[in-house]
Image (cartoon, rainbow, N blue to C red; front, side, top):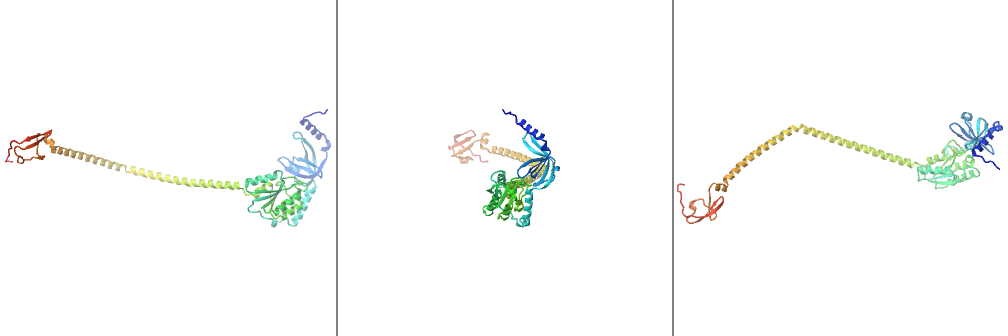
Length: 397
C-alpha cells in the first residue's frame, strides 16, 4: 500500500535529494544564455542547448557582468529546489564566457549582410501618414499583444480601426505566415500603416523576426511598417529594416494614434481658463463699478454734510416766514370776519332794526309808500305784514 504524504513533505524530500546529490554541485554547466530578466537583487535567465533548457538565477549582478543573450557560457554553482513554490533553479556562483551562441552568430551575420545591402538606410524609411484611420496588425489572434494594441488605440482614439492578419509568432511556419501578412497589407488599400508585433521572449522565441525573408518582405512593403517585437531591450532584424521601431506593442499603438482624450482635456482646460479669465475680467469691472459708486456716495455725503448748516438756516428762515405769514393771514381773516359780521343784515336786525319791503322791494324812504298800503316788516327772527295807517315825513333830513 502506497504512503500518503503532504505537498510540503514531498517538496522537502525533493529538496533533500538535490542538496545531498554531490555530483550536481561538483559539475559546471555549459549552454547558450537567453531570456535575461534583471530584478533589484538578482538576474534571472535560462541556459539552453539544442534539446533542453535550464532555469538559472544569479544573485550577484557583478558576477553576471556583461553577459548578453546568445552568449555561450559556463556556469558554476548548484541546483536549488524551492519548497513553497515547487520550482527549481540553478543558483549561479560563477560565469565564464565560452564564445557566442549559434543564434547570436546567425543574427550578427544576417545583420551585417543586410546592412551592406543598405536595407537599413534612413533614406529608404517611409514617413508615417499624418492621418491614420486604420492600422493593419500582423500578430497572433491570441494572447495579450493584440488586446494591448486595441486597448491603447481605442483609449486614445476610438475612431481608429484595427485590422488583424493572424499569424504564428514563433515555431514552425511562423516566418512564412508573417511574410504573408506583410505582403497582404502591402497592397491592401484599406489600411494606412502596418504593425508587426509580438510579446517579449528569448532570442530563440524571437527567431522568426531575425530571418532574411521577413526582413526583405518588410523592406519591400509599400505601406509604412512599425516593428513592435518583444520588450524595450529586445532587438531583432526587423527593427533595423522597418520604417519605425516601437519598444513595445502598446508603444506602437501610442505612436500611431492621436490622444483624443488628451486633446479633449486640453480643450476643457482652455475653456475653463477662458472662463476664469472672463470671470476675473467681469469681477474687475464689477469691482471698478462698485468703487465708483462708493466714491460718488462718499462725495454726496460730503456735499450734504458741507451744506447742512446752509440748508438748516434756509429751512429755519422758511419756517419763520411761513409762521409770520400764517399769523398775518390769520389776523387779516379775523378782521375780515369782523367786517363781515358788521355788514351781516341779520346782525343789524339783531340790534333792533327791521327791514321794510313792499312787493318784494326794499323801502328806503317814507316817500315810497302811501297810506293804507300793505308792507312786509322783516325782523332777525321772522317777518310781519303791516298796513300804513299814517305817515310822517321829516323835512329837515
